[in-house]
Amino acid sequence: MVGDLALVLAKNKNIDKKALRIAGWVHDIGYVVNPKKHAEYSLKILERYFIIDHVLRYCILNHSTEAKPKTEEGKIFQLADKLYLLNPEIVSFLVKYKKKLSREEIAFFENNFKKILKLLKNYKFM
Image (tube, rainbow, N blue to C red):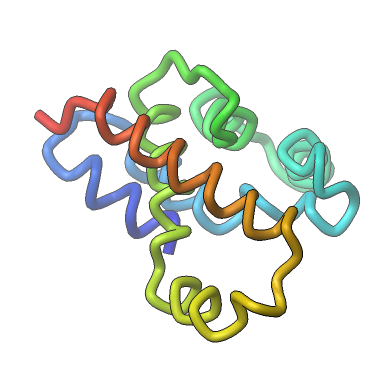
């Protein structure tokens, strides 16, 4: 879904849409090694098997809310990654299990929702 969201955001832009699609599929595979540094590990895993161009590398390494992407693809991918948290399945999960979530888990979502709004305010869609 992240790749699909990125393509929607990039619809009228002349940028590398193929990299956005690929990044959507692979940007989080490093979670299996290290959740906190998953972007770096995602890239290491991919580089074992593929040649990764600079656009895809930049999307993978800069999709966290703390990153400051400099390319248009990076900005779009970062926003798409965060908008994914508004996925109906995730929202339904939060509503259903809110009482069972830890304070840290609730804080994670609250913090990310605030960051999504900030990213949306700063993003120029046209």
